[in-house]
Length: 93
Image 1 (tube, rainbow, N blue to C red):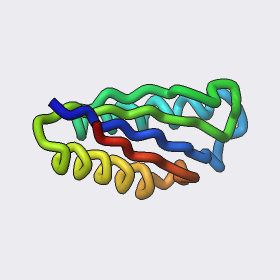
Image 2: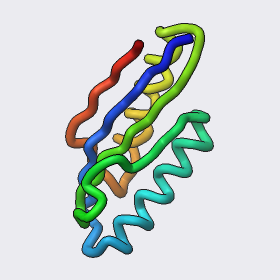
Image 3: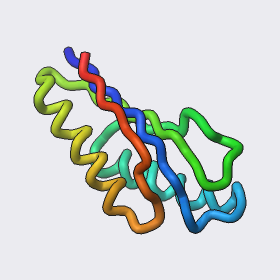
């Protein structure tokens, strides 16, 4: 079994409070969970209004498939109009 992980640093330009950030992040996290059947959690920058770090994990038998899924996750986040991807790291192991 192969586990692929993705760490994504996100900027939320429209957020002016933690409540606004939570609304955007909750919707994004749920969409990623539903669409990709991945484990998703906010793992850092919890107290910053306009920043977030997501940790995403998928498990599969094929490392190429896990990498493909995580690449699609990045594309989905980048195409979300409410957030901007600042940086990301994919690790397959």
